[in-house]
Length: 635
Image 1 (tube, rainbow, N blue to C red):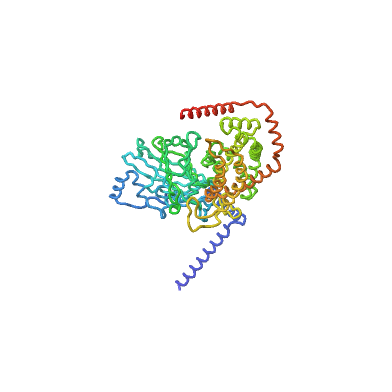
Image 2: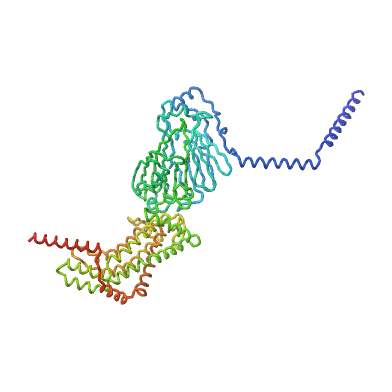
């Protein structure tokens, strides 16, 4: 009875205590206003944490993720120290699960090799090659980036032999990749890469911390950069023609190694080095001070385009680095991207000078006229139409040159009967015949040079455009009519065999250009042949011109079969327009009766010999006197 009463009392006590707790909880519960304020405070805290994480460096992977958790015995530790000295610590650190660290930006997909600390792969996300495969500038060990240095315990070591610890952080919109070769957790050699959005230039620095007692500063420290150019175009031979090592040195001077042969050079005060692969480049920029005494080499890897199909050239650069207070601290730039004038120019380091626009006046014409003109036209016209319109504009500007040439030909045609009479009259006195011929041409204002000199004015334009079209990045993979890529050949028929100097395909634009050149030269050179006299002791110019009528189209047909179809399109349109201009000038502008009247008036005027004419006359007289002496000596 007593136990039963106790159990009832216990139950009543528990119920009372539970009720009291419920009452206390009810009295202390937050009001709706307090709940709303608490929820708002929590949201503000989350947003503040996100903002701080975005503005400050937010760790993605950190050195602690790869901290030393591997325990090795003392014997193994001693063996490593005997082998590499202070850098034995780096070899005791555990490897990551992968041998590389991947980072992406808007323009790159990069893989950093944990062994050696440099780039294992560089993929350009916005471009593909002729076979729709992504463009890689670094891939499959085609690139080596190594520093050779001496240590205080008399060792010579290479960074490419050691593992680097990676870390990837964010600084605002920029991505920071740090690769550290460690002597301890606080002593290391670091490669630091800063990647910016939509930017092909990587800010790159080599710096050390706490290694002043490890480095042997009395021994040279050398940076060695090697890279093989990966093929990206249909014709590896054509691509190889525009693949070249270029460098800027001595405050703005630009030079190149050999184009189609092996070459080497040692250069001082180098500001940047460009490993150009036609339309894409890998460029190392010396950020603060120029590189001293740089040894560069270029090796051609295309001996047979049927066999050598992967790489174009092997580039190497070897340059000494300098210690500062026993440490390394060198700021650099790494550019991996298109060989595009607009893109390279924005860095204000003269990188666009690595593009072969042509030397001297030819390069100036391209940079000052054709690049801006084509950029403007292609901004609102299809690229093929832009080439045609630019060709028309160029031909209109140069039409006065054609006018001068045809006017000279018309004068020579009118004077031909008189010139033939002079040669017949003085057939036994060549000197007198030549003097009378020159006198008549001078009075009539019909010197053969007056037709040649205007033609020479076209040469700078011709050569400038010859350099412009193969290097115009904007034409790359732009189609027009049957041409799939205006920066490459426009094959309309693939051959089952390879023809030396021609190739294994047939391009149509060179055929059309060759036909247009043939008719143009037939209409112009053919007329000059009829007017050109043959002089004793001089080459038969008429025969040479006859050969040129057939040789020039043949050269176009063969040589341009593997060239950029944009260039062949230009020559085709250019010669068509030249034929049209010539017909207009001959039939509607030049009146032979008026030209004859002007010649008659000019012949009546007293003509004073200039210095050149007097000099020519004296030379001809001396030559005739020498000839007469020789004939007397033989007798």
